[in-house]
Image (tube, rainbow, N blue to C red):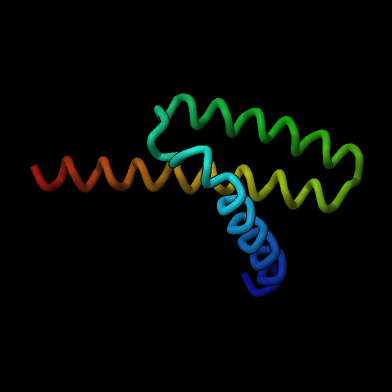
Length: 87
């Protein structure tokens, strides 16, 4: 895991920046799970293009976008799980 430390740090920092920049769009977790997955799939397509273009900044930005959608999706699922467990 140590060999990925720098990579994780870069993606995490970019994800935080992108989350702050997109804060005006609302909370990801308020969307339906299917919509989050669809949006994440679009970001994966953008990542593929960035990789094709060998544009490291775009690669990091798209990876951060994917991470933010993934975090929002998992946050939502954990929250729903906890609600079910409390019932």
